Image 1 (tube, rainbow, N blue to C red):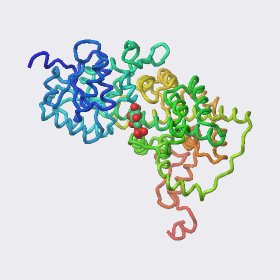
Image 2 (tube, rainbow, N blue to C red):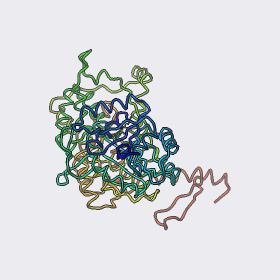
Image 3 (spheres, rainbow, N blue to C red):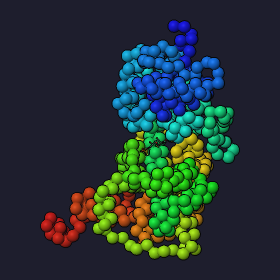
Image 4 (cartoon, helix red, strand yellow):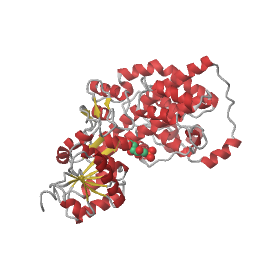
Length: 509
Ligand code: 6PG
């Protein structure tokens, strides 16, 4: 094999939307790519994109037509990145690469949205055959092209090899301000700054963290939708009015990528009907599964991620379109009274504060979930590190993540974000309006399940006594499940034969 033939630095399998953009990003950073996709058109597409962008005579992407050819074109030990659908395709490709001659020193990196438990299994299954490493990627196609947020996990040896690659292509943050250093075109120079890529931990942990990122993403999106819905229905505002409010909010504490794109979406008009495009879109939300996985995992580890779960349920409820159309005719709600201009201005401020407080709670739930799962799995997670790599590149990037980073800088072992002084004070400052916004929506019959579940979480979390004492009594009554007493050592169990009727039946005193 000549040096020319084996000159590629990285093998890239899967050149769809995410794969193509990640591969071009790698090429911008000086890595020579051997590219393969089962669909040859995808290979042609990336070659065409590269031909347009490449200003040198040396090709940055080398097309391959088989796994054997791909291995032959790579420097050893081989580094191969997969950007393929999660599930069976990952194992399919891994098996084919084994057949093609991959060996124990080689590294395969799965960058898909794989289920974290699959990743744990795969790492064990392929041990000794090759080094199975993963890196969860957030940021959509633009993020992949110009700087994603990367959540790598697996063998530290593989990380040592991949770290410089990921640090090169990841989104960058200005270390002084915590602000994203944006790159939006291949003609712009590569930004220097803190890379949004940090080693998360052993196999599975990176995908777990990305899964929770997506759970928070579901909550963030749902909460923005609820703010929109209240303004639309209770305050009779147009999409353009709401877009202008979102733009204002994006200049303050609610600054985030999702806020920014929501404003842009609401300003879009349908060329065919001339109506706001949002009004033409069928109100049935899709989902690929990561939010659902987060909610299931929260239930399994006993983390009360209620706002995240509620956001998954909100999507499910939206899909019951036929039933909702029938129910809309049958089930009556309250009449919505007109508001004065002064009331509208006040209510918009209340909705802003409800969104802000609910957002704090959703992040608190997400981080608490990671904490409980990490404890169960024995993952040494750096929570401040996670907040740092979510400051740019990913879908939930927001100015607010710098505040979370600061909170973990103050206390790396923080049990719950709500207990951090800054966030506790913020909620104290804004909670009156949070409650008012939910009250207004409730009185008008506008659903705001994410806002309400966040508030219920907050109120439950801050109560030193909950009615779980009655619940324990109920359990003991019908099932002799026992209870503990507040005036006796913890762990000591008590049981009572509760009613006279039951005492008579069981013939006890
Ligand atoms: C990201 C996104 C990405 C994807 C979501 C969409 O971080 O880049 O989260 O992973 O767009 O998985 O999820 P749904 O289709 O479930 O909304």
